[in-house]
Image 1 (cartoon, rainbow, N blue to C red):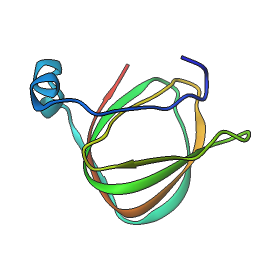
Image 2 (cartoon, one colour):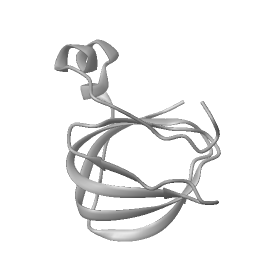
Image 3 (cartoon, rainbow, N blue to C red):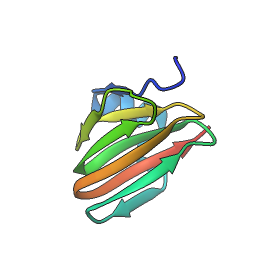
Length: 93
């Protein structure tokens, strides 16, 4: 995966359960805009919310929302714009 490539997928409930996604910790955040840097790869599954993630250095903004399975690469520097409060399962590494 290229350094600034954010991968967004749709997965079935069975696929998510097989990966243990529903056992991962949950992170929540209200509407806000803030910079973020990933020092390790993060995989997450959005339960609620709508977000635009804009990579630094001219990458295309990526829209993510409830039901999206997302992989953020290690080293990604970006800006999160949370349009609707987020609740997500997440896993690092």
